[in-house]
Amino acid sequence: MKFIVCVKQVPDTSGVVAVKADGTMDRSRMATITNPDDLNAVEAALALKDQNPEAKVIVVSMGPAPAEGMLRELLAMGCDEAVLVSGREFGGSDTFATSQIIAAAIAHIGLDEDDIIFCGRQAIDGDTAQVGPQIAEKLDLPQVTYAIDLKLEGDKLIVRRQLEDGYMTIETSLPCLVTCIKELNVPRYMTVKGILESFSKPYQVFDYNELKDEPLIELDTIGLKGSPTNVYKSFSPPLKGAGVILDGSPAESVEKLFAALTEKHII
Amino acid sequence: MVKFENTNPADFHGVWVFCEQRGGEVNPTAYELLSEGRKLADDLGVELCGLLLGDNVKDLAPAFGGYGADRVLVCEDPLLKEYTTDAYAKVLCDMVMEHKPEVVLIGATNIGRDLGPRCAARLHTGLTADCTHLDVDVAKYKEFLKSTSTMDVEKMQWDMSDKGLKMTRPAFGGHLMATIICPRFRPQMSTVRPGVMQCAPFDQAKADACKVELCPVTLSESDLKTKVLEVVKEAKSAVDLIGAEVVVCVGFGISKDVKTGIELAQQLADALGGVVGASRAVVDAGWLDASHQVGQTGKTVRPKIYIALGISGAIQHKSGMQDSECIIAVNQNGDAPIFEIANYGIVGDLFKIVPEMIEQLKK
Ligand SMILES: Cc1cc2nc3c(=O)[nH]c(=O)nc-3n(C[C@H](O)[C@H](O)[C@H](O)COP(=O)(O)OP(=O)(O)OC[C@H]3O[C@@H](n4cnc5c(N)ncnc54)[C@H](O)[C@@H]3O)c2cc1C
Ligand SMILES: Cc1cc2nc3c(=O)[nH]c(=O)nc-3n(C[C@H](O)[C@H](O)[C@H](O)COP(=O)(O)OP(=O)(O)OC[C@H]3O[C@@H](n4cnc5c(N)ncnc54)[C@H](O)[C@@H]3O)c2cc1C
Image 1 (cartoon, rainbow over the protein chains, first blue to last red):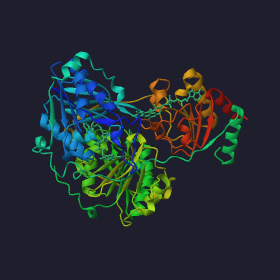
Image 2: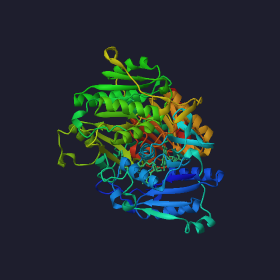
Image 3: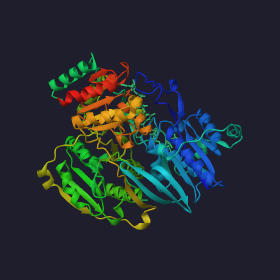
Image 4: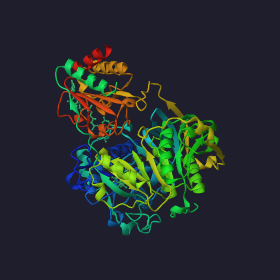
């Protein structure tokens, strides 16, 4: 039994966000973090492992070499093995190509009858929430997105899936893919023991050569060339022209406000 | 699986809208997307078609005509009663492969964002996530850029004959806008953020003229690897943020007296005929439930009047309300970023300002 968790390293968009003159992000000037939802995905896997100690938790990330630091931290949290998928051929991938490559990496690791793949719902940089369902499609697995609760019952996984106006409870066969949101759990911290052990845990890098014989990997399904979508233009969002500050005592400023709103027929 | 030939745009015609329903209730995104789809179909000179999946749902179809659909394709099957990824993805993909639309729009609801990527992957095409603006006509796209960016649009090179779908969306938590295209594959697919596209007025004559077609469905139990055990609607009075004309939104600035702060907001909302929203800080603190949250991970609203009380104006909050027609901000910190987008600002203590507003509105 394996729990494979897909984890992305992302720029911290809640901190300083650096935009270059051409409208693209200057990632080199931004701090990187583990994508928040992905920490919930890791916690979901570790919690299931707590109940099924024979299971193995493998974290998989596609990205440049520095993502190794993040993967080591996840090993220190308690994950058993880490795989970094990295190669020039993979650069510029949209979600179609990204999911193609990650699906190939998972196929390369090998999927058993009782395995579960965990993803975050959404990465805070690309913000698409598409990679999880697309990995599931490419591996022909059932998917459950927006998980807020899950339990393993025999050979079935019971997942509570969040909806805007409530929730749905879904039973799925294994293997399957689940995308996790922050309501699911509270991620644990690394322990000192975990940090010490993390350096002796298996860590592998899959480059293009390692994966090229996987049926999913073809030059026209990966990287920029294999991406159906292209960025046509990108730009900073508009700032509304600064408005009017209404000063004076509370009574005066509120009077000014309602006078302006009445004059403009807003109320 | 059958190979779907989709690299020749000339084979694909028409704009489709996936009309989401749950338990026989139409999701408002269906009407919003049909209204928007109508404009795209007119610019392309093609048909606008609604796609409706469910069990016993065909009576919902004519209304789609009232929002712009020329035709509605209805797929009915007992296995489509509750949404499951497997059943809905199969039927949607089968329909696309058979009818070959050039554009497919799906509401970016929790269901749409489950279904869209699954289908795009199966159809081998691109999907643009959570769009807030769509164009096919280059001249219109240029106008859009002029009004929303600082780019020197006239100095750029344009192919005015390009009729590809230009799908604009926020990324990086709203710090960046990107326009995405899908030039090589069809259909061009996008999920569209709920509450962003404006509904056209309902047109009874168009509803009467709309063609409704029942389409055959090939679906069996063995196609479904998941089972829906229950669907629970949370009974708590979910606020209708998206439909409201006035939203009074409270932020962490109410922290010194949460109960009074929420009461004041409610009274102000009542006086203006509106509803109460909240920033994520308020929801995370457990002061109001998540159905109130406005912003990137909450709801997008564009009311006539948006009043921010004690909200700093983080980018993730702004991205959910910055298109409101009139933004009024009350914050004791004159440097709060919310003032950058507010039409009217009052620097002061909300616990003093709001009672004054309620008082003056009573007169
Ligand atoms: C401005 C901008 C806009 C974009 N818009 C689109 C678009 O509309 N459509 C499109 O197809 N592509 C788009 N892309 C490309 C897209 O961001 C990348 O393909 C990205 O690698 C994956 O998408 P995401 O960040 O949205 O991830 P999401 O789909 O939001 O991620 C969901 C989950 O998938 C897993 N995951 C995602 N990426 C990785 C990874 N590298 N390694 C391990 N696990 C991972 C994680 O568990 C994550 O929580 C855009 C890129 C930019 C810069
Ligand atoms: C991935 C991600 C997604 C997010 N999604 C969302 C989202 O959907 N929606 C959202 O809102 N946030 C979201 N956030 C959080 C966002 O970054 C901010 O943390 C949040 O919006 C802050 O809420 P706030 O303005 O209420 O609180 P604060 O930032 O704490 O601001 C409180 C404000 O109240 C003012 N104030 C204090 N006392 C008074 C008083 N007595 N009278 C008047 N003013 C007073 C202060 O000056 C301050 O400006 C997200 C963050 C991340 C990282």
